[in-house]
Image 1 (cartoon, one colour):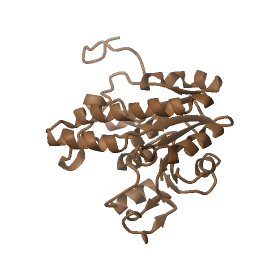
Image 2: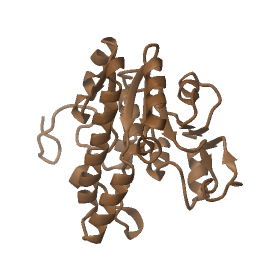
Image 3: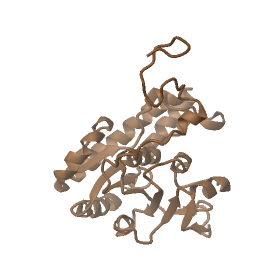
Length: 272
């Protein structure tokens, strides 16, 4: 049909909408589908776990593998020390933020390959970002999917804030975005500390521990150092399905299981 300005339109609730007008953006949608409502997205970072080698990884992956027999799990990997090295080299050479994102993604992909092989006896299978919609089938087949956590922005990565060049969407953020789009039950971030502190506990052993906090409160604190990527906290406030993110020490046996079962462990960041 033709509107009053002579433009041809298709009849719909968004007919003539610019998609940038605030009223149009606030239009209430139907309840979003939770594709995998029983899924537990568990992120283990390179810096937090993988770089420690078999002393940490073998018992951790055994624990996760055993948990996968009773719970639906998607394991997401980070990059670690090699990401920091390639970013340092890239920044020294003047690489743009999007190129740094491309480079760092390769490292977390390598870790996903190694972790999926280590989980082969638990039906571990490496999947790619384009395979997310295959998850329901893979989970029904009792597979334990593993994928890297770098969001696929690549060269289209958002500019870094405050004039920096480190990509703001890294593997914590990727794990969160996966959990949100799949409508997961839990988003669990495994670290090498017990949770969130007001200061880095490895630098200040007396740093105050934060057991539970809202995303807004945490952002207002404007901490100098945080164990989780700030972008996760920002995104959490607007999420539809993921209403809290759990940070646990994955070096401690049993912590992942406690987080899956909603037992008190680590730090909980809520969307409030």
